[in-house]
Amino acid sequence: MGCDGGTIPRRDELVRTKQKPEQKDKTADLAAKWKHCALTQDPLREPIMACELGRLYNKESALEFLIDKSKFECASSFEHLRGLKDLKQLKLTENRNFSNSKTEKGDRYIDTQDAKYICPVVGLEMNGVHKFSYIWSCGCVLSERALKELKGSACHKCGELFTQNDIIPLNGTEEEVDALHARMTEKRLQQKLEKKAKKSKKQKCETATSSSAAEADNGPSTSKKAKLDTSDSKLTNGHSALANGSKGLKFTSDAKEKMPNESIARNLNDETDLFKKGSIQKDPKASSAYKSLFTTSDRAKNQMKGHWVTSNPYWM
Image (cartoon, rainbow, N blue to C red; front, side, top):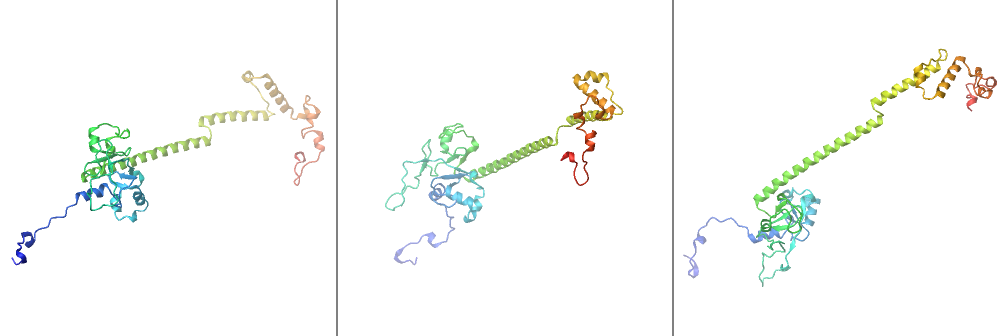
């Protein structure tokens, strides 16, 4: 066939066939998901965190991403990370049989399925062969087999209560990631509605307190004001009647009966007599020293009077 050495060529060497698409190496794919950070592809080291979609991150790289997203080329695929509230620190169980070899030598067998962490209940290695999930309420990582066999609403590692919505599979399939994304959006919408309801309640309480404070500053209520107005009108009417001495005061029998003390009635009668006489200087009962206190006395007439420059000398 034109080849030296008597070689016989095969069909695929002579005829161009349709090439098959490249397939992912399963071991390399599992190692990238379960042993490396989803943001920087650095080896995972504690503390390890996980998001609501089940991806694994180093805490340092997650903080760098939240501080400055422009440094990362894959920032568009991690838009669901808004803050530390969207991440959960995992509580992992170490594998005592894990051989932490820093350098991989070619003269010995390298076990790629060897994992640093295991399930605390069943003992399965967390290498991607078996499904693992973590509980959002406490952060404990358990295998799916442990969650199925040991049913209950309490965590099998720490004993904290949880619900089915708190279970998030790690590095799940595309269908599981879509379901987790839908659950995440629904949860965030519910949180927004709760925040709005709390704000509206707070505003209502503030308006109620401000209105009550304004009412307290304005004074008593209308009923109290009406009572005060009536009492003030009675007092003014009484004073006007006393001041009008020419007309005099006439107390009815009902008013005398309502007087709580006889001394008050006597004083009122004395005042009416004074108003009838016109001046205290004509009162025979008052002493001369008492009469000299008033400006109508003879001694006060002889004293110096005030003018427009100086004030009244009696007030100096």
